[in-house]
Image (cartoon, rainbow, N blue to C red; front, top):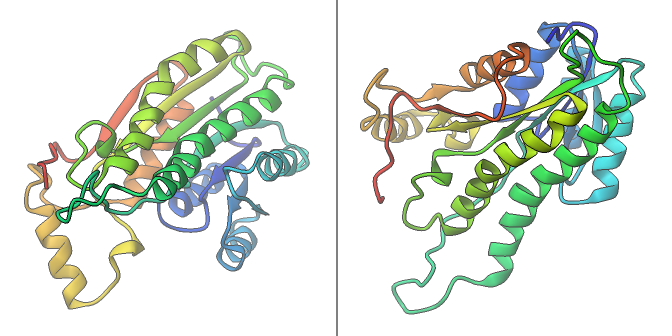
Length: 257
């Protein structure tokens, strides 16, 4: 699918993997709506790439609907939605002192990562259904969601995060089947350990990232946000890729901890 001249919605687009995706899609000629809670970073990036910022909590129906409307309002057909918004922290199901995982924080991770992704999928796809097909196949748009290796091989303490990402993986095939009727494809990227600003900067940060990269078979380094963004672009542009979960991990298989 041609990206030049379309509108694209990227949740979590103000930083990290989302920011790299925004830059990649803008470079391809798309007008990008950055749906994020960070107004300062989001507005600055939107200005830089000629896009639009929409303050968005992905778990909020009205805010996601407003972000979709902002994309439709660019005057270009909304054909792309990429979900990168996500949160997570480490808590065991039962800790060493015998205390159970608190339910509120578990619900929060599911609400943002899983329900938030579905919220973007359903509302963006409904808007795509209103557009004209772009080719003889009847294609109207493409969606890429972000899962994680944690959704396949979750580590100790990742119960909430892994549940949310496993849910995103599980929604891939049925979403693609549902949306085939309107000519919208759905794929999911499952990143391994990618180098984002979350790890900080400086000698201690670099040493920590070297330890993280040690079990990666090849190349023996962390992946980059730019590599993630290029993969997303390929999944959007190649129309015969549908209902796939694609790992980007250097061959890594996660150990228990």
